[in-house]
Image (tube, rainbow, N blue to C red; front, side, top):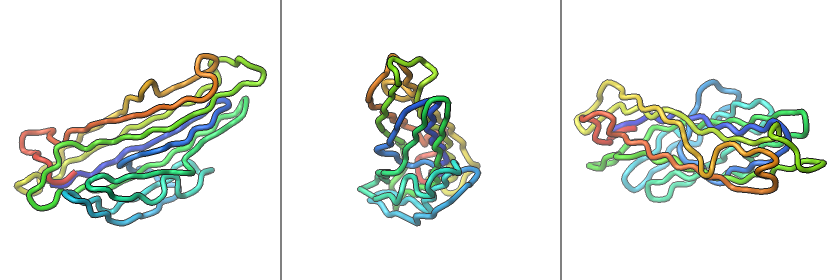
Length: 201
């Protein structure tokens, strides 16, 4: 079974903040500013083929996520340069996407594709306390397309997703002044139709 995963990840700041992503799994690409191919990664029961990062925000480094590592059936990114910051009256958006094809090995199936990420932020105002025009937000959305089941190729089954963050995806002054953390997990079922028993996503 094959699934193709597309998902943008955006960080934006409409005032003063810093945000650093800690972990992101399996995101994907659309229109490219800069693109890097990381290659194929071979897991225990599934392979991640043609893992590609596309940086969409022109002012950012080409490698926002950096090369992933494989651990069992998890493709893990630990970005050190995925951050965004700005000062009063300015905005900054940092945006990158990952694309991969996930292929089950042997008799294995892909029941669920899980995307998870976390990060931290700092919101400051001088003089304090600032107002709600100073904020930081994160976005995770994309598409899982199932293209093959245990019987072979099928008509593509498109499964869109939009992540929900904990405790929330937007933080603003004065309520969220200082430092804080956020995280997101999205379990996307590859069994979008009866015949899709998780072979390729």
